[in-house]
Length: 307
Ligand SMILES: Nc1ncnc2c1ncn2[C@@H]1O[C@H](COP(=O)(O)OP(=O)(O)OP(=O)(O)O)[C@@H](O)[C@H]1O
Image 1 (tube, rainbow, N blue to C red):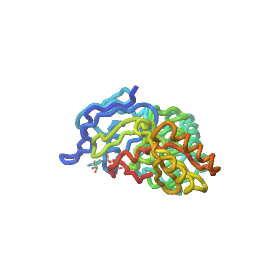
Image 2: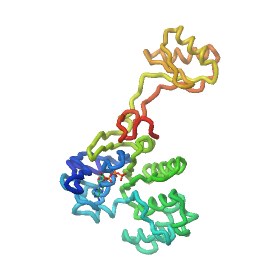
Image 3: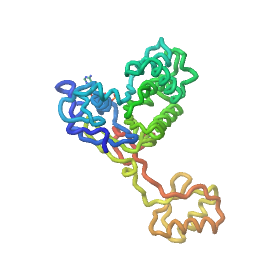
């Protein structure tokens, strides 16, 4: 069952700025990537889901509730990690996350315990008594994530959690979001302008452009098996290419690898048997799949080179 549904959702900021335009989409439990270029309307959609912005037109349901009239009830069950840097520099992470827990209605002791627990989950347990102002960008992003989790929500809305992080930091954050979505069983909507990034961890993707729905589907349905076999041997590539050509296969090159169309059920066996006959050190033999990013040829959705 969908946890978020929108129908004809429209949000205009002024006469001329339409941030969401007649958006109809359903989001299922699991991890969903909300992707689109800067300005596509992702933050606006998240804020309407939280009841922080009122739609100009259309319907919206989050966990079965209407955020416009039931904003507080929605926010009690939803965790939100905003995109911008909004942390107070002169308090510790433990104090801040405890405070956010108190704001969500947790009693004092419970808030303190939950703050420690969530800071442990995000890998900041050791540093939790240091002032946030001295934290790195990666640590600040983790504090934002911890405060979104402190009240044990059913749904997390994460706005660009990898913003400002270096590649290792990005991988660490994506790994963390993936673990929260899978191990804690919390539904997660994660915004990113990098399709190649969310594709790694998401079960479903919603791509928007200029406030309109570009595509929404399961990641598995967006990737298709291409009938291309990729084979890489550590040595003897030319000999293998020649032998395969002799057997009538069409051979191409992809870097150090050979690629050949899978023309029948026997193609795979033929390649494998030839490698054995020639006694070559096999490195890789696989049928190649498209990455989702390759299916979107619009720069707004990340483009084929992202990730
Ligand atoms: N408060 C506002 N007043 C007027 N226009 C706004 C306001 N907030 C956003 N917009 C405009 O609405 C459109 C969608 O912005 P939004 O922030 O939702 O996009 P986004 O996909 O989240 O992009 P980003 O990642 O850059 O925040 C943009 O054209 C933006 O300039």
